[in-house]
Length: 308
Ligand SMILES: [Ca+2]
Ligand SMILES: [Ca+2]
Ligand SMILES: [Ca+2]
Image (cartoon, rainbow, N blue to C red; front, side):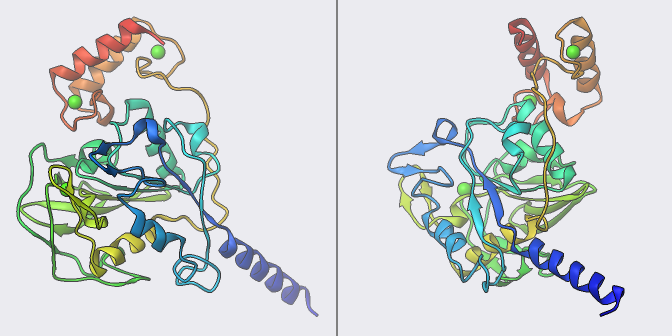
């Protein structure tokens, strides 16, 4: 056997090994989860997403011999998104949790830039992670049913099938502009779903959770899951999953008042923050509502007063 053959076999084995790596999934724990009536929106343990979760756990979908030949492995839930919590994970699934603070948004952006995946599916997805990913969120509700606007987008046309035409939508927000790294693929009275390629990683922001639910409760949610939304959900997970062997190595504590990230909180941080605020830096949205306004200055000064 030639040296070249040995090398090719070795490369092949490495590729097989990489393909067999599970997709490790981080979610937030119950301390961060919305509960409305009898609906629990926890991604891993709640009843809201039981059906799509079962689809993820189905080895015919994710598993050796499945549509995506890798298992999906749920990592222990975290009370916060931190760099440490992201180590050992490939993707993050978020829905209907308490707002992410500025440190959590920074850590998530670093994770995606390094090659990790993010799929956020909730009404406010664009307000929470839109700005870090280079988009501008809408601040008011969109209306009307949805429709696929780019049937060639990898979430609209992925390993779990192609989706086109209309989608049923309930209350949701969306994007004014998906930015230079975003690709919108669904719209109602405005774009509400987009893929992002940022650095080495990928993200999907889909501004509705009811699309991926089957249950209904008055005043809480109207589940809209059909075969179309099911395919979109599974395609989104497949799209954001990095190839096997991804390892996030970010580390270090983060304090929201430490605007320049040097580990200390002093007057330089106030000046740094005011610069960020003036230039509409994504992380100047301290309260995470999608807008950059005077409320963020007050929110920052409160954090700065409290210290770390
Ligand atoms: Ca909704
Ligand atoms: Ca500082
Ligand atoms: Ca804000």
